Image (spheres, rainbow, N blue to C red):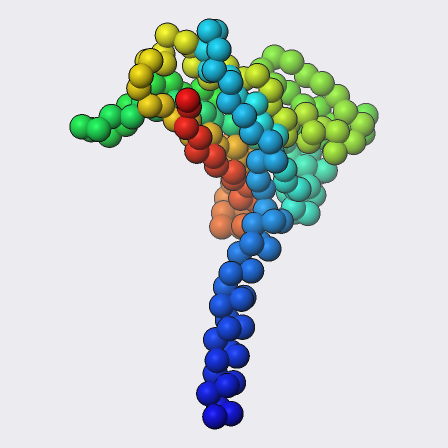
Length: 185
């Protein structure tokens, strides 16, 4: 009787660990804290905020002059019952975050625009939030058809200097990826 009770307790404990541990890991990982899609006569617009913290190794590389590249990619698909879903549009945004040691400022570059920040938190706040990003024209969305958006936000290690790419291969702290699937009404 006693041995059966211990086995039952061990099984319950393993189930609790299996259920609660992934939730705790997900709570500390990157995630969308805000996400919204707006469809208007102009087209389809996405707004989101990503919540993440830079791991210490990534922050250390940034402090030593290695620029970081963050990429957001959005793909719009139309449902098809007879074949694979049709990709209607693909668009992306790239931000570059670099530390300037002489001025002790962080520079965020997006497109041709540069902005300087005094702290890393302020620079990352500019990279984490996207508002009113147009991902498709209104003419690309067919009325009466089902559409959905696949959005990914990541730290792109392929844009790092080549020696860094070789050195960070397989290190999980350099993997920052958040993905979202959302149906368009």
